[in-house]
Image 1 (cartoon, rainbow, N blue to C red):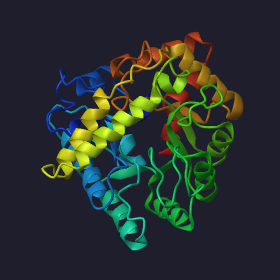
Image 2: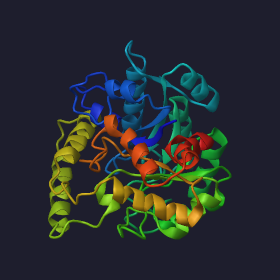
Image 3: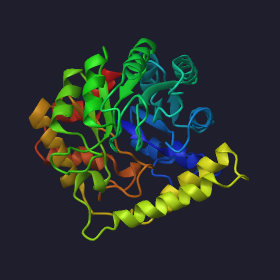
Image 4: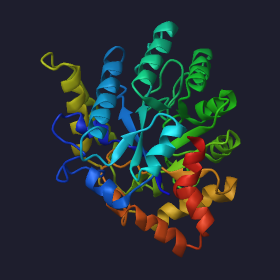
Length: 359
């Protein structure tokens, strides 16, 4: 069994040109690679950039959800949409891959209008969303991201969002959230909480990674931490990286995109996604499967092997670990886990069983 909790193929397909059906698309994940690997299930994230707010952010999320569903319905698709455990089991029994839809960044919610926010969640749920990542790189009025700032964690409204997600049957994902938000989400969710993609902060001290206390809280909720394949999550930054210059280039480009009156919402988002792909400074540090296994060992040492999973972040990252360069190589991780001394039972849990339990 193989389940990956996070990829961003939909963001790249928003250009209206690339498709997972095209082997020459340049995507980390394509239908050809999925057919070769035959994973049990994949979570496809629909990225909501924090520069957008309602109603544009909702429009962007819906665009990507519909793009993915259309992709899954193509005659040669290796993926079938699954919206509940019964459907996941049926797809797996058919030798196809279950496609589970997520939204990354709850920026489609109207922060000053609770009723509109709950309605937006209902709309996204009807379109197939079954995983919601609460934040991304920017804090909202109700949940703090990795970037910090008020609120410290979840507000009362944020807690109501968690309760509504629980009631709908949408998995709460706290990747990109700060520690206070993660702890609050785990406290108030009556269902398992996941951290879909990232690394352990104890080993790589970036704010993007998860602290030990938060890992324990995730495990206490019954959830899992999905490990990213991005070197920047697994090893310290390369010496000499000019993060201030990169941030200035980012702000300059966002200003240019959002001040262009000729762009509609879809075109603007496509420009943002394209910039992320070519943004300078993404070559970053180098890492391989051994560094990924260090993070895996660390989580196991804290909470055991029932609470760690895979969250590659393919197509949301500029490059992946050596040996895991794209989805066609993902089985190499299973072999490396075996060589690392993991039992077959442990490998089965980490590579898919733990994620399936959450579903």
